[in-house]
Length: 271
Image (tube, rainbow, N blue to C red; front, side, top):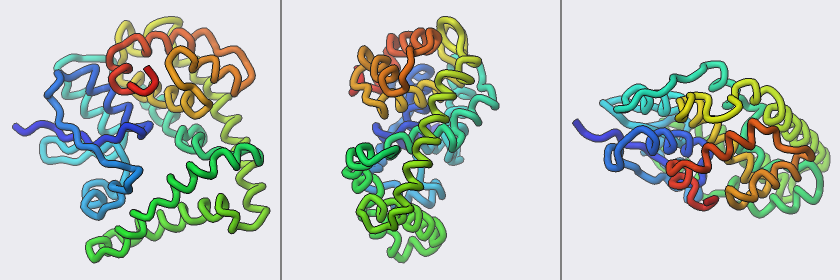
């Protein structure tokens, strides 16, 4: 039987969830990893859209099937691992992936002109990738026409704003949406997320369970988005950004994860 093939990218928030599961549950060479560079737009290639119509990472090929969402990929890895861990709480998985708490938008979030200027360069790289348009006009892209049209429209609209080509009202709208998103993330981080976390250890118990891979990936991206540069300075960055002491459960949970070799492996840049 061939190895499962896991498509990953080091800067993808949700790729990390699957990579944490793989690092925790599988021997070193049990899974084949293939990097799909989001920065180079490789996820927009028609050959990859054939595998995953959403063009997202992680994606998993295993036993003749393709799993295309973070929840599906991570669930497969958990169910087929040589070691058993606590299964996911469907409510938490749905919540952590809800648009209102989207950790990716935190990277573009602009609540004022200062934020807007700071995020402009990243927005040009993230939204203006020429690979999207290049792949969209290939003959083999015709089967995925609606995907390319939708992605070009959504990326183009926001990119026009950062280029100064959108009406002033659009900028004000971005500021309002960004503030609302920031407030949602803060409310979750300082509020309802705590109801799922233990006083110490992991949601899964003494070792991470399925929920923990998702929560860790979300939390680590939030930490990075507010200026965390290493595991040691990250909580100070969270406190500064959100204007309040980090809850003790988050402190304990962060320490539990950052002390594990799986976290160090997946997040080498924050080690």
